[in-house]
Length: 113
Length: 108
Image (cartoon, rainbow over all chains, first blue to last red; front, side, top):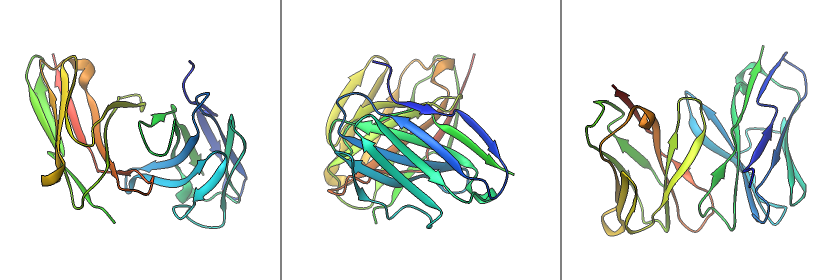
């Protein structure tokens, strides 16, 4: 099993540009989570999906952030337009069911200039 | 929401030493996990331990749910144990809440 796969690993962009982060969960996992990690706020849950359906997006900072899961093997997190304060490491995680035994991807480090 | 406090915030050890990391949480939980974030940023799940004791090699964990704390024991530490250890908890929401972590540095 290749684990949770995220891309890109690093992204540097300019303020105002659209950013799309991608995640492929572990095959057979029904739950997918997007987390953001910063020095100031630690690890924060942004949104999670069960069976491809968004269950709770209360952690999404604002309307500039959106997430989709069109099928069981793919999810995206989009930021449009990006701002410097969005700079962080974005993690995707998946599990068989709910928040039990999360497996994290390697993360996408985003820098917005 | 549930508050998660970890102690100590920083820990420096020499190779071969033992250590105990603590996680306190403010409310009852039905899910508790320990993670290790290595120096390259990868988050590794160490234990799923809402109650009881588990062991995996040199690492073991104990959760006393009734008293709202969990302990992670590292024995005979190695330089590869360096990184940040996170405790995360959840209760019936599927929203795993992370503590601020314990940063461990192991020197040869």
